Image (cartoon, rainbow, N blue to C red; front, side, top):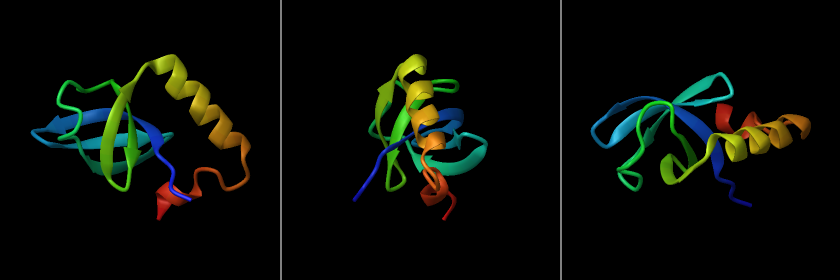
Length: 77
């Protein structure tokens, strides 16, 4: 199963950026979300931000993932 994970953009440099996933930071391509900037939340799937979402929805989803044993393990690989 593939899963898009919500994260907060902490820096953007053109089409690439650094996204924070509950404390773990990864580089992601932001070309599909040109309107997104630092402090915006995006859904990232296989290294690409595919949509912007509001903070409340992002935080609720992160809480659900935290509650699942190993739920955030995939992004640490």
